Image (cartoon, rainbow, N blue to C red):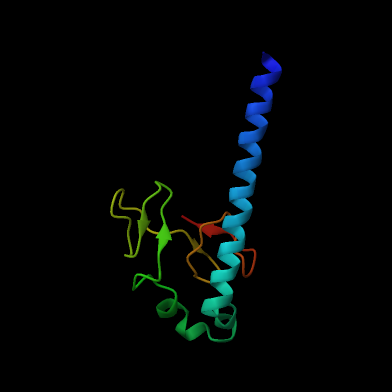
Length: 103
């Protein structure tokens, strides 16, 4: 019986790892599609280019709600941003520079 529970737990961990890997791939793809990497050479526009403004700039809050505004509609938190690139990210580290994320 305990072995069965362990197998179930391992399956859940594997699914969670697959979901995390897919999320990381999605973040990289979004960065490539929106040209976030080009912002390194254009720091003057970084504050206006990466702010959520339209439905295509959706960010997911730590509470789980998807948002398009500057703050979460459910809990009021601001999106997590890279302290170096000032881009909105949903990971622990920035996919562009590896910098810390400011919640």
